[in-house]
Image (tube, rainbow, N blue to C red; front, side, top):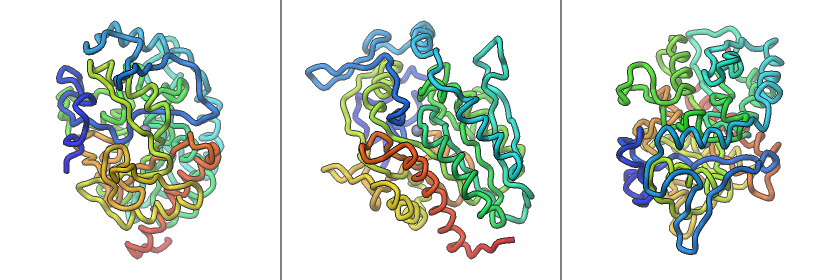
Length: 371
Ligand SMILES: [Zn+2]
C-alpha cells in the first residue's frame, strides 16, 4: 500500500508547498537529537484537543519567506562545532583514506568555507570491485548518524575495503549539525530533496543545496551500479515535540500527536525490499540496542511492519536519500537516542552494527571475495 494512503490528512503537505507534489509522510517523522545535545529552543505546544501548534506563522497558512526568516533567526546560533566534532575526525582519517571536499554550503556570506562538505573514500578505488555508499547527517540533528559513520570509517571500513569500494559522506548537512536542526538554513528538508529525475523542474538544483551537492559529487565518480547504500538516521523525541509541528506550520497544515517508536528500526524500499538484507541489519543491531516493537496496530510510525523492526517506503517517490543511487541493497537506519537505556556511544555503535551487518550479509549473499 502507498505510504500516503495511511497518512492522516492533517499531515499531508500543502499543495502550495514546494513539496506539494510529494506524497506526504517522511521516512521518519522529523528530527531529534541525542540526549546529551538537547538544547533549549522554541517548541511546539499541544492543546487540550489533539492539535499541536507552533510559535511561528498563522495556523493553516503556509510560511512565506518572512516566516522562514523568523524561523532561521530563532535557530541561527550554533550550539556545537562542525569543525571540532566532525572535520577534525575526518582529518584523522586521511592516512588510511582519500578525503575529498565536494563543495561548501552557501549560508555564510563572510566565510564561504564555513561549511565544507566532505566525502571519504577507501584507497585503491577499483572499478572491478562493487561499490558501497554510506551517508550520515542528511538530517544534521541526528547525531549518531554522523558520529556512527565516522566511527565505522575509523574502526571497521578498512576490513571491507579489499572487498568493496567505500564512499562515505558522514555529515551531509553541517549547518543543521551545528544547530541540531532537521532542515537546512532555508527551512527545507534535505531528505525530501534527492530529486535525481529532476521532477522539481528547477534545472540542476533541487530544493536542498545539501542534496544537490551530494548527487553532483556522486555523478563524478562514474559508478555505473552501486551495490549498497545505507543512510544513517535517528528518530527522536524532538521529532514529535518540535519538528513535526514545525513542518505542519511551514506547510499550513495541522499536526496531530503521534508516537515515537521506542527502539531501532530500519526502512526498506517498497519497490526493492531486500528482506534478508534488512533482517541481517536488525540481527546485527539488536546486540547494541533494542528493536522497536510495533504499536497496538502493528505499525511503526504509521506503517505496517514487514518483519521485526522493518517498514517500507517508496523511496523514489519521497525523494529520500536512500533512493539516490538505485543500489541493489538499500536501507535507512533509525536509531532511537532518547531511550533511557541507550547512551550516545551505544547509538553510534548501533549505526556501525547496522553497516557491518548489512555488508556481511551482502558479502555472503553475493559470494564476494577480498581482493
Ligand atoms: Zn533523519
